[in-house]
Image (cartoon, rainbow, N blue to C red; front, side, top):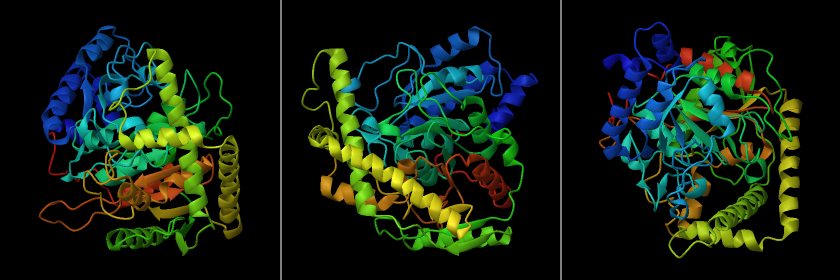
Length: 482
């Protein structure tokens, strides 16, 4: 099916709906493509086409994506009867006994699950490398990371296996892989997309779930199909005035956008990222928007410390939860070195520090929206990455802790801020470096836009305008399934 790659998920669904192709044919195509790139990219933790065939045999595919192949990430989102290891040796052999709330909403939208993409252990780094599954490679340059922690998803979509994939984001893990692989990625507002049924938030609210995709409309339509309250929600993102999909085709009004180049921790974009930022600012101005260099005043050291304490405490709790189920603590070698160090830190953080961390996140949310309000800004623009996708091995949880920590802190330093304040942010594939011997098609560097809590509609509207002005879906990396 040579034309498979010419369609996004909504396009494939239309083919099924008009009987130009069957859901079984799409499944076969996706599985074949997954198998074709797995050796080069190592982006799947498991493929389970038999479960997909069982799903299709029930014949109840309805919804906007009826019959479209889909994959989830090996982290927290469960598909009944499929493996879920969270990228960790300590979870090896675990099979999900029920669907996540989000999984059921995906089923209701008609998506067909045939596999799972790789994640680093517990999603703890910005590359997708693990002791359990090895290194996931970038289809634009296989010596480099595809991003983390949703790097399996980004590699699979960028290589043409499927048009979109589920992803999650606790510190940039949707936006970073999207930027590394030339895709569109949206991190939703806290409380927008369900995370149940066991609990409705993760990492004290820092983590959210959604997807990355080649087209903006797929991303928006998927959010339309999955957003909304779930049982036990303690907070809910504002209900949109109309479907997010409608926003994609509507050009926004003339916007005032703050350009924030130096990250809270002091990191500045390198030459490649700065070139992308300048080109994006010019594109925005050509489209009638106003771009002003300005940024909120944020204590980068304080928020980094607060995030480390929060995540470490949650990792320690997750390890304890697993130990209670299995009846034993992880044995030596079942946790990666930096994971183990973080869990140890999590057990020693004074309770008052977690309260201070939460207070600081709230204060920064107020600071950010006050900055937007006082300056009359609609959105803020930053580079998603401060440099091109990093070489594999540098940011792995088995690397030297000191050098790994420095590399992670400087790689995508603006991203975690939007997790900490609970606001939405998107990475848009607007810049590629010049071709080189290692990357003959160039390397992507995404540009990130963030807004007020609940402002996904505005972000989708701008993303649609940018996609029409400077399309990216035609770009294909050297490793391509088709």
